[in-house]
Image (cartoon, rainbow, N blue to C red; front, side):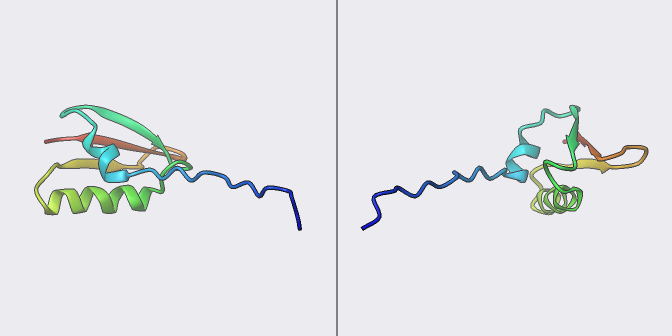
Length: 73
């Protein structure tokens, strides 16, 4: 019998909607595109707007590998 223990790497999942909701109204943050995909941020912002929880401006204009997110309400 093999006495060697198998090890696993714990998974840390980022909750994009929770991250966006943690922003204060009027606050702007820069998110690395390596951390969270820009299309995922846009989709989460759109879903939050649709259920009328919050509203955001999400842009990549003039930025390299970053996403600028501003919470409006």
